[in-house]
Image (tube, rainbow, N blue to C red):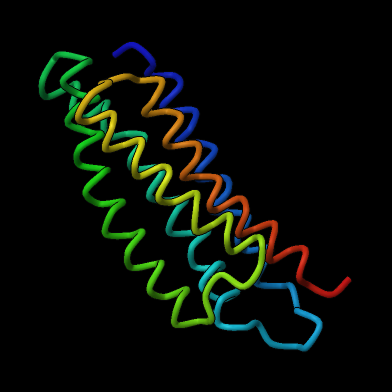
Amino acid sequence: MPGEALLIGIATVAVAVAGFTAVTSTLVPPDGAWAPAMRIRQRAIVSTSFNVMFESLAPLIAFAGFGDARTAITVASAGVALYATGIVIWRGRQMLRAGGPRTRTALVLFALGPTATLLFWLNALAFASLAVYALALCIQLSVAVVSFYSLVSAAQS
């Protein structure tokens, strides 16, 4: 499939990001305990990274089944769009229960997930583009990266 190396590369980066989550378990915030929103971010790093890893493989699996790159991207985009919609709603509710978007970082996180999800939907319905799919994956992976950075920056030196 055209773009196979790009998709495998994104999957590899996603696994590496998930592995870095172990670093956050050794960090201690200034008050000695992570707030609920920060614990959600820690879980979000792992779950988002693994989601991106599997989602990067979805077009390759679909291509093996359909034998057509455009169909594979469309089917993968539709499946990921459905799944991501559920995850965005679920994580959004968790964040709201944990205090909501009170920081700039939380606002960025609230924007990234829906943006990636919208791109997956648009790709499924209109574009059928590997570039749009890869962009959506990278935006989705940035949720994990921003969450990781927010945990590291909130920890004591």
